[in-house]
Length: 396
Image 1 (spheres, rainbow, N blue to C red):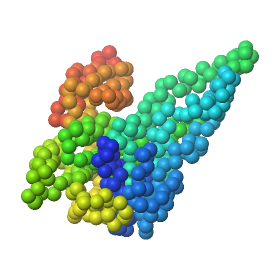
Image 2 (image 1 turned 135 degrees about the horizontal axis):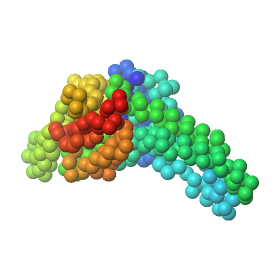
Image 3 (image 1 turned 30 degrees about the vertical axis):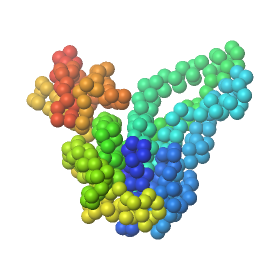
Image 4 (image 1 turned 60 degrees about the horizontal axis):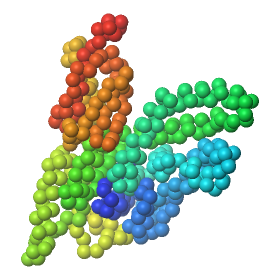
């Protein structure tokens, strides 16, 4: 299966680009599902067919789905919520209010990932096109599995042991209800499912992300930051769709002004995303709604290119070795600004922060026995130098 994620700033035509790409794939004989994780759910409007929480056939080989967050919540988180509601009920909180208070923060993002995993594991698709939420929500969505892994590895086992030890004591003391093992098991299952979806979404042989933008400076600035953040989290970008490009020609001074302004931004787009294809979609006379319009959108944007090809393979994090006395950890961070970059060593981990986004990376075993000897941002990659720590190196 091939998985293709679309994201971009709100209002740039992200859903249209995703639906058009899925339409093109189906027309080429690929059994395709286009799935919306965007809470706004405009996918049904784009394809002109009502969609629900299960795949609905739109046309031969083309299916659409909009994630039903409430239904997936009932299936996944109900046991944990029931426990929390019981606690609030004992505290005198109205049960309906308690249910509202115990909705999982970020539930829509979590449940969207679970539905993606289900379709990857169980669906009969050749291609899964995911119409993601606007970029800020998408970055939270894609960072979630690794963040939960950090919690599960370090905090969760301690919490579980403490609760097991205190449960009989507190129950005898005052009937205080602590979570049963089934509650912890529900969290463990959630972690396992999210780990599975991250492994697929970061697999360069399966998944890539496509950025959608319009030729505007503010939009381009966000797309540049998104490329950096996606690289930080280990996701591979395979191209850019530049939407609503004014065609040149004619004597209209107003349009000529737009064409000139967009040409400057498009030149910056090409320079910013050098090495990645930039697909251009012209500003259309009408809104591209329905399969015929979406097919025309895709034909004009992609031309003779193969929009389903995987980007060139390459490691997203590597370790370079110079003899026995120097190692360099290399983490690609294209377009990163050194002023937004922060690096901290914490035990066997390094914490990399780029603007508002942070990732905790476990160091390879050889680097755990080293000390940091400097770091620099060079040609779009963070390079962290390590030298062996004699106190630890001699024991191996």
